[in-house]
Amino acid sequence: MSSVEKIPTFIGAGLGTIGALMLIITFTYFKEYRYLYRKLVFILSFYDFFQSALFLLPGHSNKYICRAQYFLLAIFGSTPSFWSAAIALISYLKIVKEFPDRKLNQIQKWLHLLMLITVIVLVSVFSYTHDYSTSDTYCRLKKLINLISKGYFLSKIIQPKQVWVQLRMSLIPLIEMVVMAPATIRRIRDMINPNGSQLVTLDIIHSLLVTSQGFWDFWIFVVFDPEIRKKIRNFSSYRSYQKNFHDLESFSPKSENDLLLFPNPFENEPKEESDEEKEYDKSEEEEKEKQNRIFL
Image 1 (cartoon, rainbow, N blue to C red):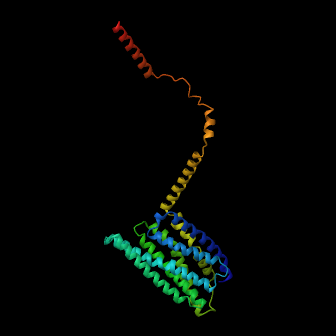
Image 2: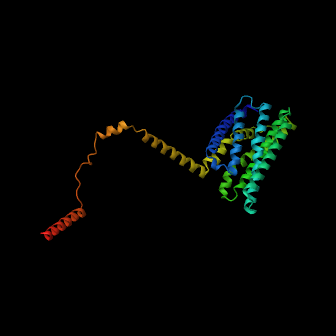
Image 3: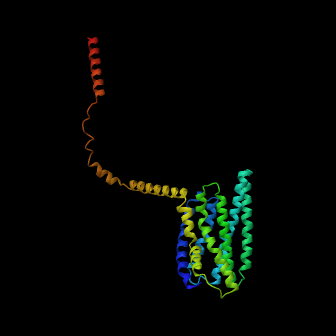
């Protein structure tokens, strides 16, 4: 990696690490929102976190770091992409064919297990590669495939929603994919012809986008999501209510006794009778007088 790329890479990695960590914490606490594409994003956020954290390490361009990134991408990146395809298929079958939930869950688990085994085999084969350029290119190719799958399946899964929601969910992966494609092609060209021209600006944008993916995912799937935003607001209000209630409970009996020394000035004040009460008293007196006359 050139010295020009180091600063945007470090900035992007810092933002990506913080954003991915906040996204993981949010979806860990609010488990009820982890379904369909949100579950996919939750799994991908682990990859975003570890990838950004690896870029913060000194010597992150080392071939072993690249292999670690590929391993994380294979487990957390490629698997959810195929898994999201299974979710889209299962959702379609559930709506059209009315499959029972139990069978759908079994199909989903077997597809996930099959993809996981495939990824482990691929990782085992490519872990013996000692050519850094080949390993780096393979990392970029896998990332590109993952971005295509992520953007495509996210747009498919949320198809019933409004158009602007679809754009919001897949815009950042689309932008990154547009930048990643020529960057990957350039990397392959550099392997064939190392003395070719360098596209420095493209490398800077590519480094910033790749390393800060967790930051953008946090904004897209948490900050801009009205359901989760409302849930967080309600949670904040509830915490505030709990704090106020705790403050009231901490009110000591001694202070209550102290307050008893200062009686309410309106407590012993004579009440004025209302017109209805006066009328009732008057009628009661007349009734008594009438009974006395009868008795006499």
